[in-house]
Image (cartoon, rainbow, N blue to C red; front, top):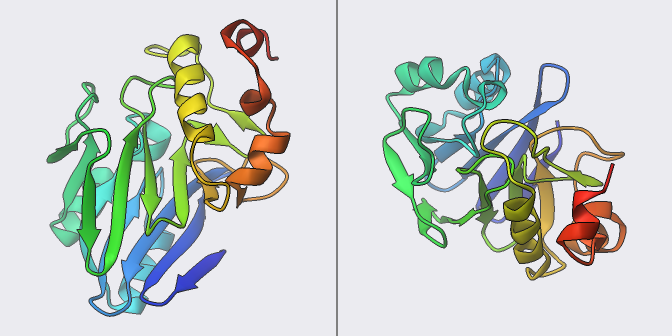
Length: 209
């Protein structure tokens, strides 16, 4: 369970099932916490929440697919917390919609939401404290999310990936699935090695196997 600690901010990467990742983000000073994509089994994350004595404020969903959202109701009922999702997300129930570029604080931890459609119309990425980016099913290590499911779009995905390429190299990419040769990587390294970020144009992107 990789854990990153920076002053008051902690991110725990939690493997759920075979290859899904959940992320527990919390502020050490205030104990305020958010769980990103509870997935199909939130028991491990809930154990960490209890062990650390955290005050769960939010569930954040990067998109509506059930392998990311199946335990939303269980977690919400247990902690009486709200669900955050993109305001472009039309196929699930949530409490707080966020727009592209919107920021929110979790105690002393800052979260910035980026809308990155392509895998689904309502996909989100989350920049945490300007150091980390949780990319859901938009960007994986070495690949990107598939676009052949309902609501997917090659054109939108390519545009979203181009936007991510404009972000600082120093950001650490935490993806929604353990599909790559490592569980996380710098965005700078992904710009140099990820075939989907190396595509020069939409036509080249569209023929990547």
